[in-house]
Image (cartoon, rainbow, N blue to C red; front, side, top):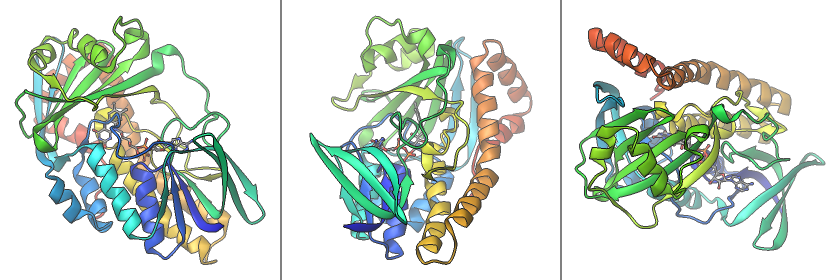
Length: 380
Ligand SMILES: Cc1cc2nc3c(=O)[nH]c(=O)nc-3n(C[C@H](O)[C@H](O)[C@H](O)COP(=O)(O)OP(=O)(O)OC[C@H]3O[C@@H](n4cnc5c(N)ncnc54)[C@H](O)[C@@H]3O)c2cc1C
């Protein structure tokens, strides 16, 4: 069967892309190697600018029903106990990826998307005027054909697939991500970021009374931790920041919510097109510290979908699509990416957080401005 479009990866970027294409009337297949719902490493802090995009996808009511926590402030807590509290430029949501990604899937299915989970893409070829996608389903080899293919497979496509050719970084630049939900600790409408040598951990309240703890840890620093389980890593992180250790002292891990990812490479070059268009983390990963990765995933799909429609209708060529999409991604993402990387670097240098803290306490607008510089523009 020849599809109009195949979207590879059913995270935030892929599901929203497939939903938009199906809404335009295109026969769309969405493929993912995992089964859903699933827990995923993420701070689960949905920035204010994401919400207008989810609303435009028709998901407002579904989100309201999940009962996300409204978050209005961020608190930075350094390993020597000092802290800084900054108002957010808008109201963010604390919502689990378990529920959010499921709602996106439901929306995609309602729009007519065919969803194939437990299907790992192994190769993508150009074939005639379209593409051939090969994949493994259990131990069975399957193949699909489409007029267009969109890569939405996140930051770590398998070797040999488009987007996977960027060189490996040194251990110093390689991170791992871990996350778990907890109960038993108080929650406020605040996203807390705890810093310590070798990384940071964010605590964000999510639906149903849980909090999500997600950490980004330098592999060179935490790679030798004895207990390499997710909870062992979170425990090791807490050992480096006494306020965090106190915060998690009575925390009860929620069974089955633990997840890990490695390596996380924060220095990948921005790449909007590589054989096929790329959306979400496949394009570039903004440092998780900024809490804007989901927003960038949604926005890249929002930018790409109308151009994909233009190409499928014969209104623009493939070259025009590539040019227009690349330009729009550069225009929108370069600034927040540059600032996000600056912040990531600053918080990784031992003495700088204290300088930032001192300066920000002196001029609170500076801290607010820094947070805002990492955000995408809200187009609502
Ligand atoms: C520690 C940490 C904390 C973070 N905190 C936040 C936060 O608080 N707020 C925020 O906005 N962002 C945060 N982010 C970033 C955010 O999680 C990502 O930007 C977002 O998930 C990107 O969505 P995506 O759809 O591009 O990729 P993903 O959500 O990674 O989805 C990619 C999908 O592709 C599938 N896939 C991969 N390879 C294949 C294959 N070969 N075949 C088939 N399927 C495949 C995967 O199974 C996956 O489901 C954080 C990231 C980390 C690491």
